[in-house]
Length: 440
Image (cartoon, rainbow, N blue to C red; front, side, top):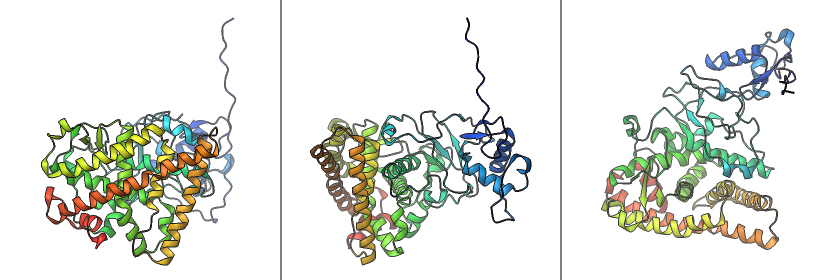
């Protein structure tokens, strides 16, 4: 007997309750609610409820309040990022609607690319989605964003449950991916528009509006060509902008007053950046330092002769230390994506000079919290470990922090001199604040 097709049971629309719902935009809804949701997103419609946002949405009178209907769409999981753009973008509606366990992140091979047009009022679209990639959920009502601001303003990654280890780990892993994959426009690192970058930006503006430093062109960590002195300024700006977007997602940052916030962002930027460079060099199997824009500094001394002398001394000392004391241990430990993400966050929570007493308390509290989360993560990721093995792994992970501190000091000393004497055209207000003034 041949195999007979079986019709799947009808699903009710999760928005209005109508029978015959099917999978659309990451959740289940009827064709009517699908069309309503699509039109709302495509045409950027804004609705206002006249009854305190408490209207009941059911099939018979679902059109009575569009504001509450749209909010219900959001509440049941319809994802604005999955609405196809008018430019022919194709997206698989069947990507997972539930983010996998923390341990599954390491198996992800492909991440989504976020495209934000040059206009500050254009809507975010999602492109190039792999079914294996956990979707980035939306936090709160979908709205247009000012793309000059740090990425936390987009509300793409919702804040975690700060009492739940898995939620915290998932949050920081997704933030890492977002900062890599979010781009302002369809540019690669060699496009003429990516030459818009500036070192002469005050730190207060740079960290609040990273796009004042440079556009978010595709960051591209793959090693394709050697970094030269003429490209140092460009990659420095892109990576500092990446850090600003990443740091904006740290929940405790919002608790600091403006002075403490700026001291922490300036003082902890370089260590956090070296965690980023080390990890991206590791996962791209780079024989040297992945420095974005497809550039890298080779670890092979025979290849280093092709690098400009202005940056050779700086990069060589950094590369040797990072490869031997950071990348190698991470590879040997088979560090997970979640472990890396947490250690990087912990590297931020080291107090800098001249913090206020309240600021020091916030930083100490955050450090203790994320240490506890790391301990819980290691136990859950390696359930077969005994107490001694858990302590040993946590200790090895934490030992990466002083390595990065040493690397950061070397960079500050060398790049500080390059900034003062304008070597490789690195003179500017922002590098001076980050590499020189903080130590004065």
